[in-house]
Image (cartoon, rainbow, N blue to C red):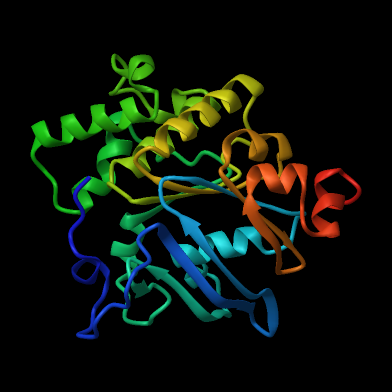
Length: 272
């Protein structure tokens, strides 16, 4: 997918962008995240690979979802939140105050734990953001709807129901619709916060298969409490604990030969 300059998309200044490291889609540098006086993420640094699935694991309250929301500035919506450090995307620090956050969220889309379709038709769920972005031509919208639903492995199930309410879909279908809605905006990065935790095993399996297929074209970061899920689908795994990034490595190494004792204790179920 051809990409226009990140400077034109999301940077509202005349400064030159920093040099990007091509094999990485995101570089996290000395990132601290605060809620008021409480520091929720403690000076973490790591690189997130392009066209890979990166899993964030750790017990509840360890900072992984806080970090995930910082990547497309969702934490900005929480009163009292602030951050230090950098997250570099295509050579630009996306935590810069001059970033156009609306455009950033088109580039870096997010899917939440609970499916949240709009109370509109299936078709209008996909086209809502597109119309807001100025795309009005029906033939173009039709093509994007079909393309997005196909990529989300949902088209064959709903192609004859596009005028029906999205709320008539099953939970698993609703979550794939939310993924399709994100894909319609042509992101380069997809953030998913426990996208299958509220779903039945069959729907969970479909989401996992879908993510493995999507990583050919997108870079995916997923928060999950499901160790088996992380080991099945991710290429890299980051283990968070008490706001610290304890260990980050290839998933196979994390699950078979972790470097840190705390990582081993967590993945073997001794706590968490």
